[in-house]
Length: 279
Image (cartoon, rainbow, N blue to C red):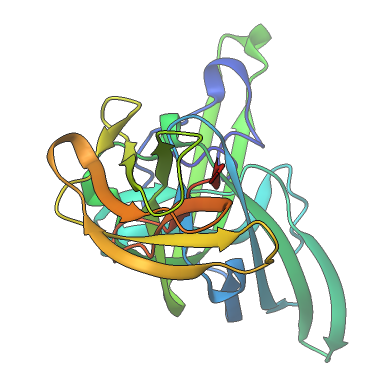
């Protein structure tokens, strides 16, 4: 889905989003060097089912001094992909031109410090659990030559595309998680048993909903009304549909919550504290 690499320079019927573009030949490939690529400050990205996640990307671009990149018919930037460079299983492309500042020049080259934002819309880019994995970064360059004036009975579109990768360290995209909690009964007498239930779910990109996450450890924590910090009570394992349930003794007024540390494919989550009045 090269939305910007193609779409920013073309419009209407010439917008070729989704087209697998041919790789430009070595004879026409520009001499670009992408370096110091950092995506999301090196942190994992948790994505839910509807909200678009904005991901900052910084990099250094060195280009020939006689190469003009106008972000109209020519474009350079950084994309994310999984799979191999020649056969990407999925990719996330920039949708707006980067902001670049010249930091050095020579007789033959220009070096720029660039910033861009990748907008990860789960409905457009993430399709299955397979996308919850390590992604790679690649530098890209594209050029469009088009003549869409059909007054002479002829139009033409020429498109070159180059990519360099992988660049920088791997980036983890994870399924966002949610946690709920409910402590009951309330109010409760001091020393009586209370039941703390909850549910752990995570984003299902195939259905666009949150599904129960089973067989996962969540930590039950308690914060006294007079305290500003939580302490661990016990660890609970999620059951069918991500259900959490345990019991504990009521000792004082305060808040109970569940905390999930996350896994290699799923982000962390913390439930809002549920208050218990102990009489």
